[in-house]
Length: 124
Image 1 (cartoon, rainbow, N blue to C red):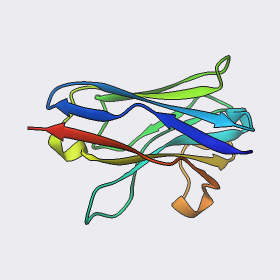
Image 2 (image 1 turned 45 degrees about the vertical axis):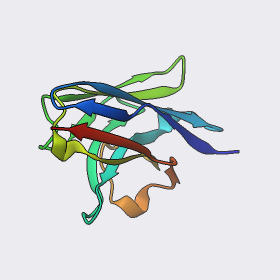
Image 3 (image 1 turned 135 degrees about the horizontal axis):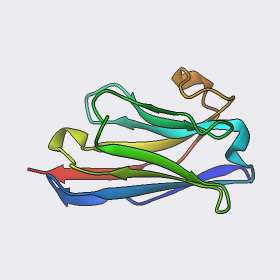
């Protein structure tokens, strides 16, 4: 079965850190762009960070640059999102997603695989 298995997330105070993991099951991510979107209640879905499995190139939304780091472990077939200096406005459900291709950012409709979502809550 092809799926994205997410883990991580939780509740943390402002300024704290969390790490999200995303492990593709049933495919290798080296031909995919993989990363995270997030959506807070009442807000539109927004891109957060992505990595090209082929080149290792990365993309970060301006709102997370300098605080979040995306990385990949090919041996474990897993992608990680290290989130530091978290702010209350980072509170959202984070969704891992994968789009076939060598780029680092695609429109949401291009992502053919989605994880189940994990909640990140940052208290002030």
